[in-house]
Image (cartoon, rainbow, N blue to C red; front, side, top):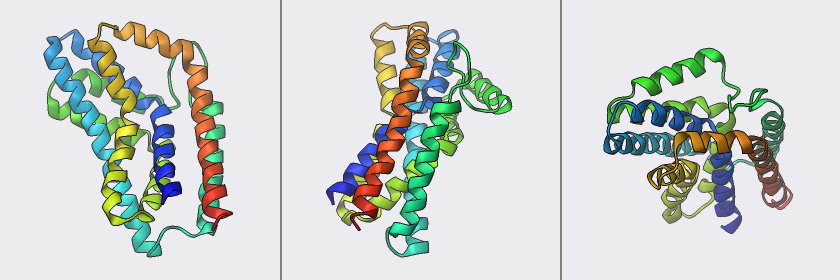
Length: 229
């Protein structure tokens, strides 16, 4: 059981290193603080985080259902070998082009999608819109997170039923941990500008750590789930 639970935790931590959710939350903060009192902004941010975590948990549960329907059990070593290959490919992709060139934190997203998310952040004036924005940010990151969700769902299927719901919650909470930390930091007095400066200064470090996380997860699956099968 332990390798499967560790896989869920590791995948959740790798998910947490990705930056689209953080970047979108900064856009929401920037737009909301200029229009609303701080209490309203906090409500919008809370609902954004809930929306992001909700879709993440829903995706994990859905992926687990699909795996069970197709395989009737967790994936076999041959299928996991393909998953490992995808993880390695994503690690290289994170290092190569997750961030665009230049002294900014602009991400890989096509300009049309980035502009759409920016507009939605500016127009999010209600809790429902903020919740939807959180789901949108989660969905837009799927090219990089879907394999993590698949790995997590596969590992959860190998856990006892009593732990499966808990494991989904653990993954979802880890995935939104940076968002929750940002909310606390802003409430303690840090500004959006301070956070953005920190992101620009440390973006290469974050990129390296994220890529390493994908590689470590691939190695973990190789050692414990494929070679150890």
